[in-house]
Each structure stands twice: as C-alpha cells, then as structure tokens.
Image 1 (cartoon, rainbow, N blue to C red):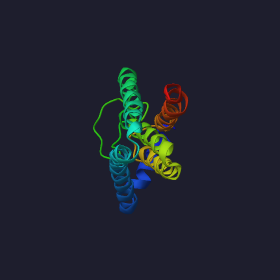
Image 2 (tube, rainbow, N blue to C red):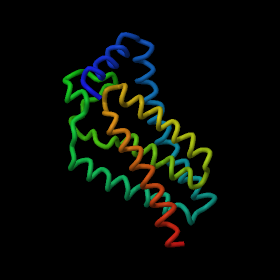
Image 3 (cartoon, helix red, strand yellow):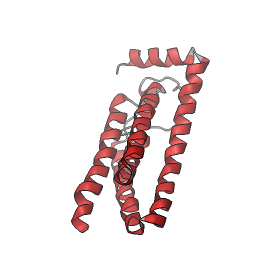
Length: 169
C-alpha cells in the first residue's frame, strides 16, 4: 500500500474513538487469547495424548526460532517508520516488520491446534485473519508482512505436522 492509503486509514480510525478502541482492544485480546490457547493445548496433550507433546512443542518452537533469526536479519522498517506517522496501535519498535511474528504465531498455532482439533484450528485461523487486518489498520505492519507471516506460519505447521512428523511415526 502507498503512504496515502495508510494515512487515510489511520486518520479515519483516529477520527473515531470507537474504531480506535476496537483496533487496540481486538489486537490485545486476540494476542492474549492465542498465547493462552497454546499452553492449554499442551496441557491437554500432556493429559490425553502424551506422545504428541514433544512434536507440539518442537515444531512450533523450531519454526519460531528460525523465523525470528531470519526476521532479525531482514530488519525491514514498519509503516510508521517509513511514513513517519504515529501508529494507531501503540508501538515503538524499530524495524523487524517482515514477516509479522504475531501473525506467524497465530497461523502456526492454528495449524498446531488443527492437527488435534480441526474446528478449533479453523476458528483460530479466522481470528488470525482478523488480527492481520487489525495489525495493518493499526499501522504496525504492511500487508506484505501479515501475508508472509500467515503463509509461513501455516506452511511451517503443514510441513512439520503433515510432512515431517509422519516420517518419524
């Protein structure tokens, strides 16, 4: 998106207290919820499918570390840096915009949950789409950042759980 588009979106959101509050609230709630869902999944696996705990930790864990290293090396600026504007979502981080780690985690956790409970995985994926839109509207990511985060997160889950894991079973 162009600078003009980002500025129009941010101005429209800032002009409405309800829209601004919703963007900030949705970002916080969905982020918190997903970071509670993943440990809950691990606890359930520990109780009911103990042999699945290690893959449910290793596949997301290794993926997260690899993405974080790559993202750190890429160190792309965020929209509010590029366009020198205040983001709707309060963020002060410099760089590390591509790919979005929030969205990567959402879709990787959605894939992980989908492995054990497809309906819940789909719900998390839908919440991830909402969070992706929110992160762009909030001015903290470009569309390419959230798109890449979603594709890489889902891709790591698919590769890990449906292509690599069966080789060890």
